[in-house]
Length: 162
Image (cartoon, rainbow, N blue to C red; front, side, top):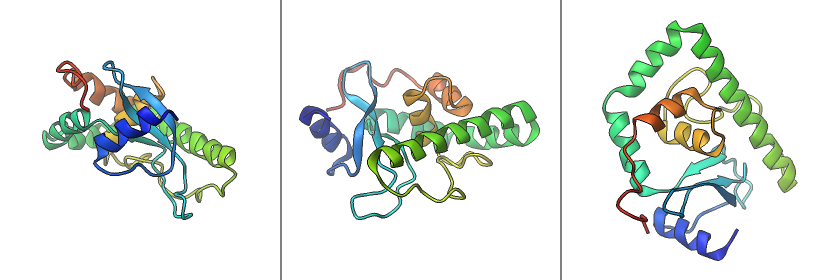
């Protein structure tokens, strides 16, 4: 990863990033807005969030969506729509497969199979930040990430966050 990207992520997070593998998505402003992290931190502790949203403006906008009750609506739809539930399960499976591949690439023990993937998948809608990060990193992979992303304002329109 380029040092300028590491510095941008450091500024976005307000702390040094941990376990970075690379930039998974760039904001239209040019900065990273999603990074890929190793499934285990340098000390060996599990870190199940493969795709981590770093842009504070995007995070703030997603927080507003979470506060609006959108996750409750999504959870209710998940329980009542078998097709949506299957797509969400496929998003979970995609995430776990990519996380396992990252572990293999890094020469580390994969995370336990029964560990959640991210954002509550596959049975709950728990964190839109994680679901949007997955959708930005792997377009078309996450139905709820896509819905949330489509509901967001253009967080980059005022220029770079850092």
